[in-house]
Length: 430
Image (tube, rainbow, N blue to C red; front, side, top):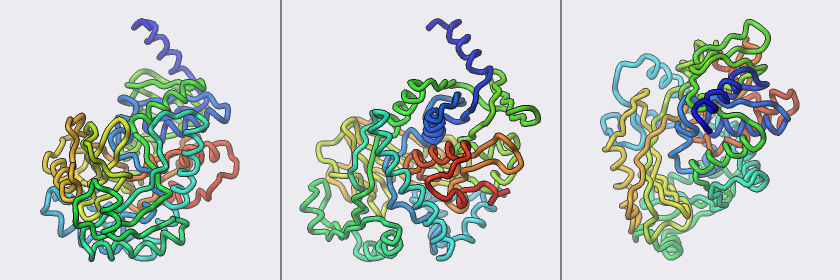
């Protein structure tokens, strides 16, 4: 397509549509796909390139096992101890930032058994729905994303940490999560990628894995194949709900839509004034994660693993190998911190014979949209007809993507959704 034809196509896309989805990560694309299946005309607007946020470089695990929230009893005490350790798994950059400290206070107030359980119930419902739905979508839409029903293991080298890691298992079993405990000697025999010294492992057989950048590409292909329009390099600037429908002012012109789905991820607070929900500034902080991607080493773990004491996730696909995780609260700092990247490799080296691959392909960071209660915001924007939110998924965006997309489509259609939408309503931050 010539440059002139491309510009004309973009101009046509930005005239009017039934539903505009703002955000081209996994949440925006799954929402678009579910809406297209309802017969809607959909236009996806992405400020940069598809998957350029936290959808690209995460570890791609699909984890109903991760239902328990980050806001757990004892987390704040641990975070304060780690504040002077820049390569700690959870790091809060010590700086004067009233929004961050307000968010941390609200987060800290939820670090109790009652709220921990409440958040886990809400997360589990969406994670379980998404896990089942994603498997169907991979089959029905032919999504080529290296999806595998692999299970995920938490691996421990310290006996006390292994015992402590079992505290939440009763709740997970109550939530329907299959759990198996594997002793260290058996685990080493089953998986020769690990060095001697494994204390034990917690196995979650129902978890799965995919390659997230391939998942983004496959979702975009499915959206386009069903008539959806995707416009990259199109930044949202204003939202006007005063007339019929919504007028979106963008960097490429004005788009008019009947409904707008705002799947902005960690950028949601930055656009809270345009959205008309000031509470987003209080609700969400960007939580920075890192990963390093390599060609596969000769010996790799048999399934995705979390090296539990070091909080390092290791995933392997036919096309590559990735170390990832960590949580850093440093605002919208856009630097790659070499100390935190090195911590991933050091952590993996404690457990694995071959912790890194022969060729390094990418060093990456992404901002996760961390809500203060660790529950996504999905639903109508209070007081603004035609605007819907789908954000705040924290570290679970890929895991919750298919369920979120379907929930958004159900709510917009006015039909009863597969799960109770009450816990995710944005009104809790109004």
